[in-house]
Structures are given as structure tokens and as C-alpha cells.
Length: 188
Image (cartoon, rainbow, N blue to C red; front, side):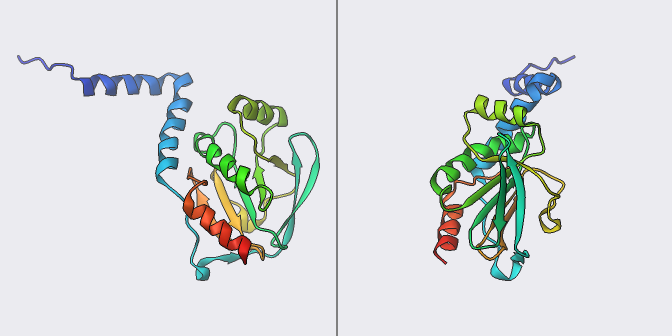
């Protein structure tokens, strides 16, 4: 009877399976896999004919520090909306790219990063990950045209309320194509 040798591929496969079985290692592995996707995938703008027009509205939110804010959507300012959570591996993977975009466009684009979690959980998460993003909690029901069951779901909405980009899943928001889209929207 012939015995099979354990090859490096087989050993790595067994190690990966073991890591996925151990609960404490699942999330870091999922974040790492989604980080690879972020490096490879950049959202792109819809063709004009495929852009959904929102009725202008005011999104009522509260910062994690408890400050109320009314974000005016489709009322003269470009808006970036993200629905995310601290426990979501694809969300965690894309947040560094959103933070870089926010660092450069935060004074020109209204960034609204919406989570349903407790403020202290979000605050501790942001401190641990050293992220400086405008995380907020909704104070109203999500508008029907923005409601999705999966996170992350992100939108770039133009000054008049047209959804120019909608992306579900992890993506590179700090890409040249996203920056070019924002520059065009800000110039118009």
C-alpha cells in the first residue's frame, strides 16, 4: 500500500481549515481576505441613465459623542454615505480606504458613516483601529431607496440627489477612479 506524503500545500490547507474552525481566528482571516479584495476592486460610477434620483431629504443622525446633526442629502453638497458595523469583516477591510478619502475630501464632501451599534463599542473600535472617521447613529428610518440588507453598502450622491455610485461589499474607496468621480461632482 502506497502512503501519500504530506506536501506543503496539504499542510497549509490543514492549517487554514484549523484556523477557520477556531472562533477567535475567523474574523481576522475574513478581514485579510476582504483586504485583498479592497486592493483589487474599485467602485465606478453608474452611467447617467442608471443613476437613481433621490428626493432631497435631511438625514437625522447623532455622532458617537451624542451630538445631533442634520445632513442635507441632494441639497447642494456631494455626500458619501456608508452603512457599516464594527463586527463586519468587509467593513473593517475597507475603512482604511474610506479614512484616506475622508482625510482629503472631508471638507468638501459630507461623509456620513452610519452604524446601528452602541456608541462606546464604536468609539473603542475606532480608537483600537486608529481610525478618524465621522461615525454616526441614525435617528430616523433608512430611506427606502437607500435601504439594503447587506453591509457594507456605500453611496456617493451628487449635489442634486442622484446616486452616482452604489457599492455593496468591500472596495477601495481611495482609488483614482473614485477620486476622479468626486472631483467631477465637486466641479459641477
